[in-house]
Image (tube, rainbow, N blue to C red; front, side):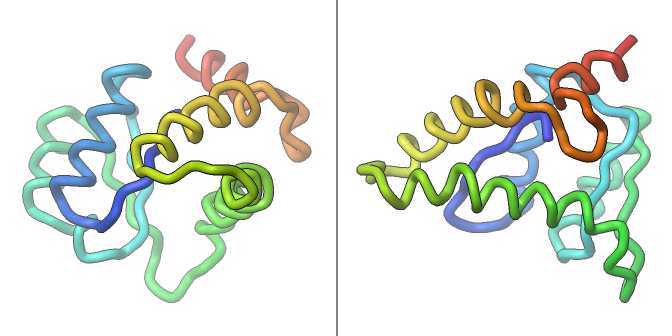
Length: 129
């Protein structure tokens, strides 16, 4: 994960906001991996990805295996970040997102991943070369 935010709902506008935030910081990706939620199958998203030469890749129906990486990230996020948030005094969505950005860049990206034995930040930077 190179970027992320918490939102109150899921919609195409929210998806666009999230993608633009990530791309503005890290550049446009070659591939965009998504699950099969309705918002991820919109014609607008397909057209935008086509125009930017982004491969739009949806997780196959009834095949949970490609979701393992995402589920692992969610688990890490819940165990490390969200447990700290629950113990603190974050009251607004803006405060939550500021805290998440700090955790993502200071903790998640800088800790060695148990499977790759590399820091996520280092792997992402190597993929850009």
